[in-house]
Image (cartoon, rainbow, N blue to C red; front, side):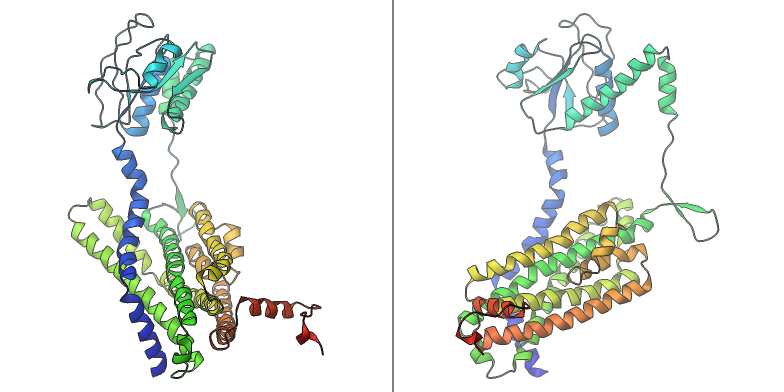
Length: 465
């Protein structure tokens, strides 16, 4: 046992004293935070975009204003429209409810697409309350039954185009109802009479009793997805240490010195233990950092957000989620850690390792893909079926726990993981012995695999009996 701890201590200190480890330790949560907040930051940093509508009437324009108000909680400035498309009744000006609206409607500076082209290209500017600004887009309504043309230099931005399509659907409904003799007041009454669809769950307190779905009900599902992703991210991050460390020791002939002091199973166990403690260090650092930042910022956060974070934190501590998550983490790490150790022992260079890493990385991408399915439907039959694949069970078992799977399934999948871990550790020890001790390489591994194929005999003088 002391030999295993010595090997683990040596490898662990080798990892944590490297500057790259601390750089990744600090930058990883920062990069993930920026990645998650990027859409919000991009939306908040985007300046207001000015657009115009060329229309002989104002039904489509009013529908666009209403759609902007519904989506963004703001009202586009209602500006006079006289001069280009005929004299229209003046509408009282409404100031935007938000200080920085995403889109602002301005009077059309021209009546046709040819004249608007210079404004859309930025060659000419339109007058606004903030001064001359470029025109982002223009909507040209030729007639009530014709096509609405959307002109813009930016063809990738779809938000305003989606708003225009939604507004036209409402205008089309009004037009069809008006042709059938239905009054506009009746249409407004019909829309205001729409009922809300409220999600409820069947309670256990009695037959026919239904309860509204709250965050406490959804928290286990959200937490299970988060824990499965954290497990995937940690395994994906730390097993690379095992691979690269083994390649370095093999190329530098360090194995010979190590094996004079410890036995091979002790060396293998110590290396796995070192990276396991390394991953626990990462988890402890990120968890304590998150808790500390949340506590320091709790006074500045809305009370409702603090309560929601507390609910999610309590969901993590539920035994039905935390227990399988911890077991899955340990077994999943041992499975993939042993695989990467075995592969590293067969490689002399990083280039050789990259050819072998590709299949394993593809395997690790499958659980990540299943996470996207779980976001929409965690009870998907695909997740239930794939959870029986031992290489995916550590991740998918966590996802299934909030759905209350049968106890026998949980125990059976845990048993499958244990057996798979034992088998892979045994095979990895043999491969590690062949590579680290006897100097076997990728060519020898290929010959060994070919010998396992029934009916196939290796070529060469060794194949003669």
